[in-house]
Length: 146
Image (cartoon, rainbow, N blue to C red; front, side, top):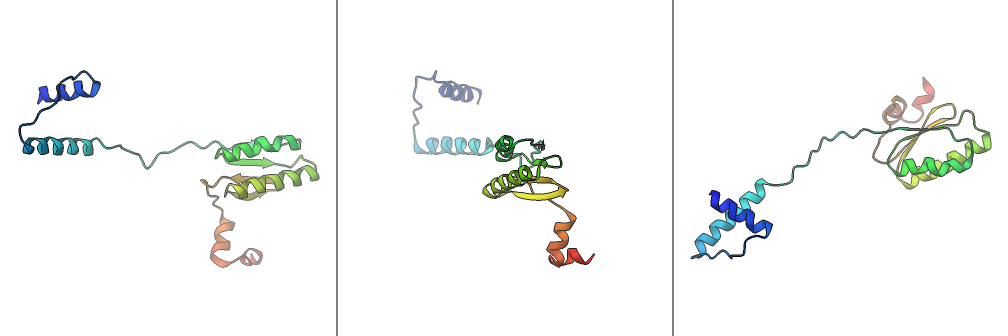
């Protein structure tokens, strides 16, 4: 077994000049089955429960020129919180329009989390909120009854 292993390793590395010659088909079939079993045992292992740390980006744009950089974070699958509390009304409207369009194009979601504070997330992240659950269970008019 040791010699076989060494011969196979030498063959893989390209140092084997000799060809394997088999006396009969049974031996050929047996070696083929051994190689097949070994390949199955050496299958690729993929972890399904990988936890990747998600970085949330906080942006407080003071000019419209910054909006494209904020949207690039969303394109790179990073959630973005946009704080527009100190922004002028016209700037805030333009930023929300741009970010809403970007979010829609990327199949993401948007949630207002405070007065002039918005959360934009890419499609690989879901926003969970009590309000969203209440609307899903009882309908849109249930939020006005309590």
